[in-house]
Image (cartoon, rainbow, N blue to C red; front, side):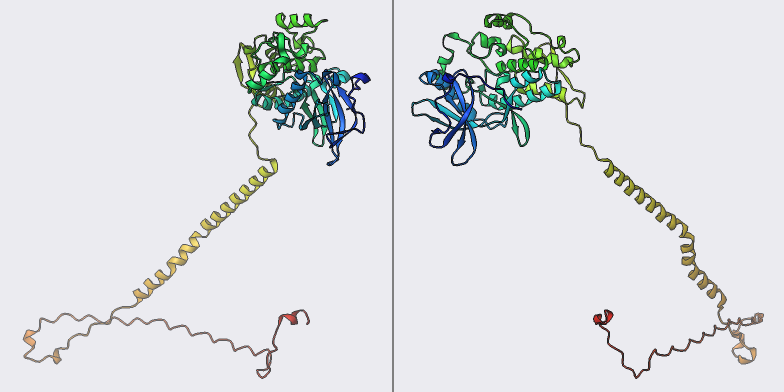
Length: 446
């Protein structure tokens, strides 16, 4: 996606032509573009042999301390950020004439303004994706107390990287550092006399009024304007002159997204209108809130929870769905469970089936013992013979009792004759033959 050619007169370009060595480390290769007060040159690091971009103040502004302070402040602000969505600053130095220059990474691609000029408008999903990337870079800037104050499609660059298309925020030259009152005091010349700084089509009402307590909510206004333009190809406020533009921004309501895109989600129109509220207290208070609302539209997996703020229903970020088990894993678990159940049923079936046989085997020895005991009878008691008793002992004897006839003895069954054991098998070879030793090598014929 090539960047649109920039028409610049030779007088506006830097006197540093191709082949010029800057700072003893960078060789100028060509001209990339120009801005209101500076030019951007293509160069190459002599030691690293890496392409870079050098931003230099134009000669007619080199003596302006306000412009010099703005450029140096941009370098300091960007150097503090580590986000991939912010262009990286590599070095800062001064030319022999005292003009400062900033060395940055060289980007390949085009900005959103060139993309809109080529395509007119973007689909909803693509536009939201680009704006979310811009929000990621602004979250870090706002966390450091830095407000950009000049967000517009020209400052959102779509860089071609090995990881894909990455949006990067450019030009923090007029950004405001809320965390350093001293540094802001040194930059009071940038807004001296109550002059407004920024692009009129993307400036918040408090920025037009040049209010001193400007904060991150001014960037949220610019993000809402950019999103509207990406979807429709036009700004929500349009006028022929800057004064008329200021008048509309301060007093009129923005155009509705549904007037240009009837099929657009109504929640998206609500989000844009919330970004463009005249009173900063009625907008999203942080970029994180805007990100939550936009992600609720781009990932409608779970029904979002409605939240009410400033009389307008917002859509918060949905919760990520719980991780589910894949179908192959489910089938494997089901098959394993089925096999275990079948094995358990078969085991218990065999146990119940063999229970009577086991009980019979356990009762058989006790029954045989009882039968053998029943066959054994005590020996008969011998009776006394009257002739064997002397006459002196007879009076001591009691009257004779009738003698019972002895029972015939019980004959026990003969013990079974043991079976003769079979004769011993002859040896496979004569006993005199010595056995052949066996080894593992004989198995393989070694």
